[in-house]
Amino acid sequence: MRSGFVAILGRPNAGKSTLLNALTGEKVAIVTAKPQTTRNRIAGVVEVPARKGKHPAAQIVFVDTPGVHKPGSQLDRRMLQEVYEALETRDVVLALVDASRRVKLQEQGTGNREQGTEEQGVGSTHEGEEGQHILLSAQDNKSQKREKKPSWASEDEFLFGLVRKLDCPVFLVLTKIDLVPKDQLLPMIDALMKQYNFAEVIPVSARKKDGLDRLLARIVEKLPEGERYFPKDQYTDQPTRFMVAELIRERVLVETGEEVPYASAVVIERFEEPQPEPVTPKKKGPQRLPLTRIAAAIYCERDGQKAILIGKGGSKLKEIGTGARKQIESLLGTRVYLELHVIVEPGWRESKRFVEELDWRNQLERLAEKTPGSGDDE
Ligand SMILES: Nc1nc2c(ncn2[C@@H]2O[C@H](COP(=O)(O)OP(=O)(O)OP(=O)(O)O)[C@@H](O)[C@H]2O)c(=O)[nH]1
Image 1 (spheres, rainbow, N blue to C red):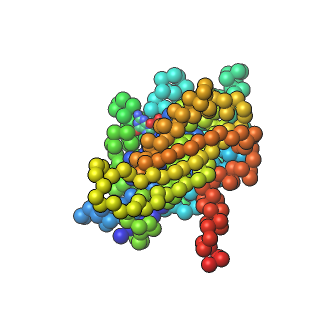
Image 2: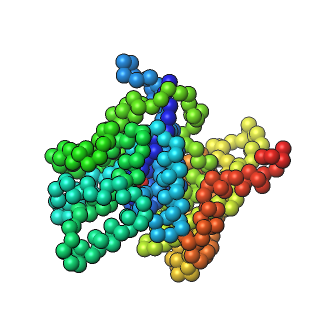
Image 3: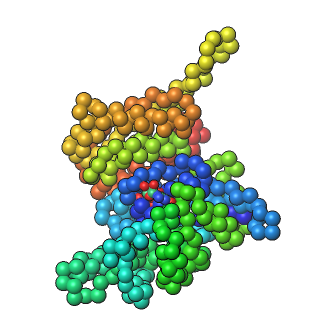
């Protein structure tokens, strides 16, 4: 048996969460078209059966991470910290690059430089250098005097800089290849192989489930021998109540625009599991599913955002609630009574305390402290 941790890294919107869900076959992480959807690292567990003559059975713990981007707020810094924490325990790293975005940038004429200059600056990993580079690019646009880098290069540099120092195998995973003409894929792979010493470049489409078996097989080859980290039937490390909070946040992201999605956070305030129903064997008709009662707060930063989240006569909040409830019911397999309300917490993204409190791992610790009989006081 082999087992190990595989960190999934990439820029916002590279397709990390979609890949995690496709590999696990479960909705472990929420997915939206908006960048910076994922805020915490999330594990998704995959059991790979043995393949005769190829590899033994394995358990792979994939760890989805927030998109790597230049941090602006306290929340961004926390998100980057999540990436570093995922890198602390990893046997293999997947660096995801959105192939369709590369093609798009190339077509726009921003990606047609030779390979040589693209390599410059790879390895400039820390925030200062990244920030500086972005600043230089802006000046380039104005003056056209300095050497201009293809925009994909500056986008990917930070990511490649992060992974080039690692001493474990790093696979470059080209994502969304269903959107890329086949004849453009090989030159892209060639260019990327020259750019960095990747163990391999693996093209995939999570949406079409293309390339996933090959990816799994290559990962298993690199994993150490070891026992399972999680029970065989457990597919994530997230407790249910936090998956529920994420499902509500997903609806907020989908239903609202502009800055509201980025300024919103969801906290579960009450989660009442169904009480066992009295046994009534003679009762006619289909038995109703048990009911889970959930109350959650949607935090935002300003009154204007609160007004948008609530909508005219409460219509937006109702839409968010109805959409989220359906998803939660299918996750829990019960009926759900969902109560939502909106709280303004001015500038929470800049509050280290608030951002720390949002982290589900910290919330879990606090819940354990509150629960009688748990922890040290037993
Ligand atoms: N066509 C296509 N679209 C994809 C594929 N994978 C992801 N997408 C889309 O790309 C968008 C971003 O996907 P996510 O999985 O949320 O990306 P992410 O890297 O987790 O994003 P962040 O959480 O912002 O870091 C969504 O609209 C997905 O539906 C794919 O294989 N093919």
